[in-house]
Image (cartoon, rainbow, N blue to C red; front, side):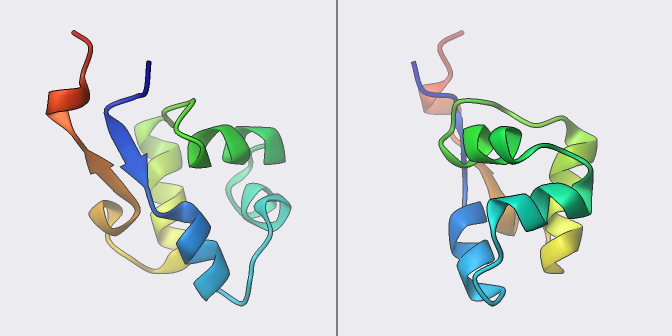
Length: 74
């Protein structure tokens, strides 16, 4: 089941001179595998990690992540 959170990380990375998942991971202290899982919607980051990602791209949090309550399986 998909998480009720989507993200624009892949587009933001592309817009940031095609930043790699590894580069983003290094900048926020995570692994490339974690970044890949977040991008695919298979893992929801902690609030701190979400803010770190937004900070790297210099955008507000909701430019990176969107919450879709209608998709919440609860």
